Amino acid sequence: MIPREVVVVAEHVAGELSDITLEMLTCAREVAFPLGWHVTCLILVDDPKPFQALPLASDRTLIVTDAPLGSFNPAAYTRVLLHLLKDLSPRLVLLGNTSVGMDLAGTLSLGLGAPVVSGCTRIRGEGERLSFTSKLCGGKLLARTDVGDGLAIALVMPGSYNRELGMVDRVPPVEIRASPVSLEALPVRFLELVEPKTEDVDITKVPILVGAGRGIQSRENLKAVEDLAEALGGAVCATRPVVDQRWLPRTRQVGRSGMTVKPRLYLALGVSGAPEHVEGMKGSDLIVAVNTDPDAPIFETAHYGTTVDVLELLPFLTERIRASRGR
Ligand SMILES: Cc1cc2nc3c(=O)[nH]c(=O)nc-3n(C[C@H](O)[C@H](O)[C@H](O)COP(=O)(O)OP(=O)(O)OC[C@H]3O[C@@H](n4cnc5c(N)ncnc54)[C@H](O)[C@@H]3O)c2cc1C
Image 1 (cartoon, helix red, strand yellow):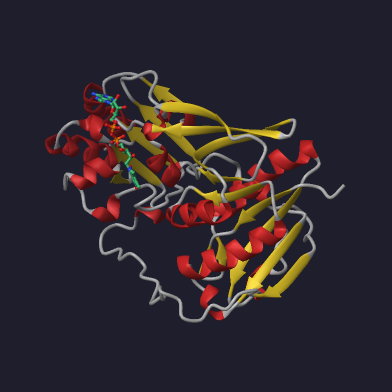
Image 2 (spheres, rainbow, N blue to C red):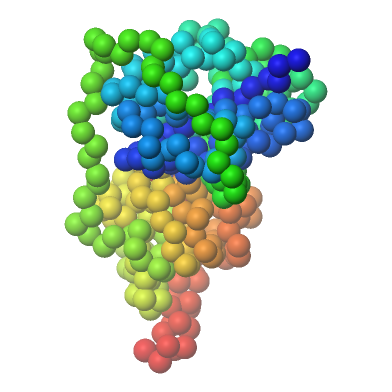
């Protein structure tokens, strides 16, 4: 019997696989291994060179090449994917719960007649059926979904799987094919990759970050957060609502639509821990959270946490740190 297949649709930028691709490979392995299924990592690119010797945790790497696949183009991707996926006939297709995955999921669902499960944080095979756990409403609700035994498309939430396990110590068999469909006369054209400007502090390079969330309650209270960051020798960053209210510039925003940071210490102050924020800071070496709500999702990510009122804690903590540093 031909084993069933899980296809991971890789995301890449400037010749490098994105973290979500490695996380999806970890997820695919977790589903496929107990069931004896195969994992294919599908990479759509113009130039296969940067990808053909990667030790990915798949049973094979299938690279499909054509000039318009060099950078993400939803029209080119869907044309190729619809053709290939009909041919491969997998049981499960994994996309990132990212702007790329969201761009593709609807058209693939329609073209393949397959349901889409979004926000997946865990996927398990139970016999021939798959069970999906998804985070909804900014991580406050968990949903379990069973989609029957046909093809399913799942959007994997960044930060849900260990990216390190997406690489192994051997290179799987690699197959390189030209695009099976013409990519001429596409309705969408890729123009250029625009990197965000970092005129302000580059928070991706600062080893100690104090993250301010809506729990700090007002712009006036930012001064106390800045004092703490200064005492620690670090910088202040923030969640999106804080930036949206213009308490801090956009360059300080951490998360899906902001920056990804990996400092030695990340202090999350009045931050709920929504998946979109956690995605940008989960790689920090040490995460300490202060949140009055003991059920706040940030405590699932933090190494240490306290439920004290951040506004009461701030002056006390700053003073103690200054005293310990002789300032
Ligand atoms: C497509 C998309 C992209 C997004 N991108 C981002 C992104 O890049 N970055 C980002 O951050 N968000 C992003 N978001 C928004 C995200 O979903 C959350 O809404 C946001 O992260 C919540 O910010 P918060 O934790 O500051 O606020 P809230 O969710 O309001 O949480 C405030 C927390 O403070 C706690 N609190 C209140 N008072 C105190 C106190 N006195 N002491 C201690 N704790 C207190 C509360 O218990 C609460 O948990 C995105 C959303 C979408 C849909």
